[in-house]
Length: 237
Image 1: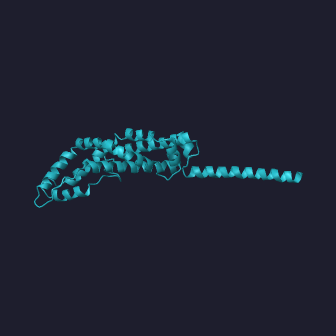
Image 2: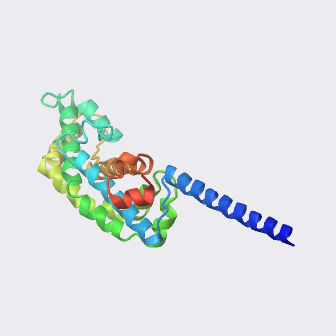
Image 3: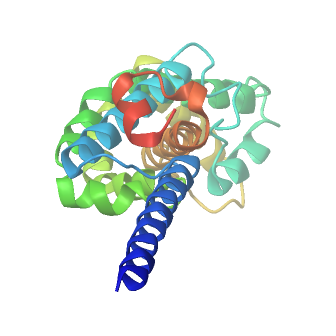
C-alpha cells in the first residue's frame, strides 16, 4: 500500500512540475512573438497605447517640411495628370510644372497630416476589449489592418476638406487649373480635368497607414520600442 502511495505522490509531483514548465515555456513563447499575457483590459489598453504611439510617430514623421516628399511615402503624380504634364511642359512658362506640382501635392499632405492625430485617436478609442483581444495575438500589422478597415472611409471623408484646404494653402488647385486650361488649348488633345483632391487624399492616407504598420510591427518585435510599463507588461520586456 505504501509502495502505491509513493508512486502516486511521485506522479503528482512530476505532473505539477511539467505543467509549470510548460506554462513558463508558453509564456516565453507568447512574449517572444508579441502576444499579450495580461488580462483582457490590459491587452486592450496596451493595444490602444501602441496604436496611439504609432499614429503620433507617423504624423510627426510625415507632417514636417518634406516629410512626404523625401520619404518612401512620396505622393507621385497620377497617370492622367502625368499625361497632361507631358504635353503642357512643352508650352513656354510651364517647363517646371512637374516639379512644382509634386512639391505642392506633398506639401498639402504634410499640412493635412498634422491635423490627422485626433481623427485617428477617436477611431482607436472605439476599439472594444473583444476587438483588442483578437488582434493582439495576430500578425504584425493586425491592429493597423483593423484600423484601416474600420476607419479608412470616415477618415477619407473627414480628411477631404483638410486636403482641399491644404492644396489651396499652397495654391495647388489654382495652379493645376491653369495647367489644365493650358493643356485643353493645345490642338487635337482630348479635353481633360483630372482632379488632385482624391489622389492626394488617398495617397496621404496610404502613407500614414503604412508608417503606422511599421511602428506597430516595431513595438511587437523590438523590446526597445516598448517605451511604457504597460507595453512591457503586455508585450513582454
